[in-house]
Image 1 (cartoon, rainbow, N blue to C red):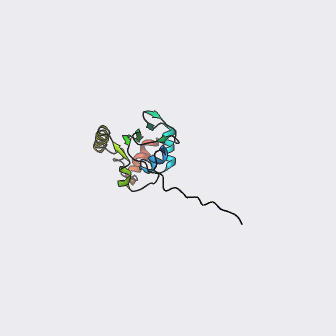
Image 2 (image 1 turned 90 degrees about the horizontal axis):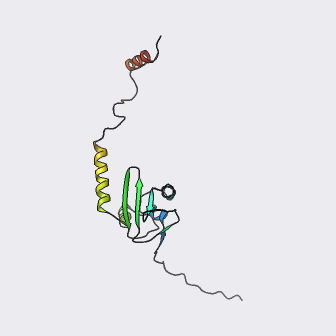
Image 3 (image 1 turned 45 degrees about the vertical axis):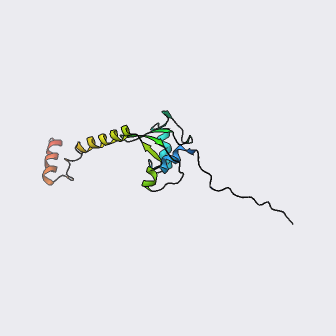
Length: 140
């Protein structure tokens, strides 16, 4: 008869480190981990002021500079989570600096004041517009 050793599985261990791409995904800065990895590879997300590979581990207290489009976040990691939760839960994972919040608000206000580039375009040209375009582009 065989003897089997009974092993106990340790309870959920408390995370002290987590891959940076997984944390960026869980904190809802990027929709997918692959987008987070691409941002890290492209240098649009920096850990403690330096470029980091997606496999680099992040821990509480680390500073991240994340650039998405024209917006930039300067955050400090407060908690780690390997699970993607609600937006409210994601906001508890980091703390954004006051300067970063003010800069993003200023950028949003500036963007609202700008006119939409495609605003004058009203859709398909009318018959009259087509005739004018044809007259202008086709010289007989």
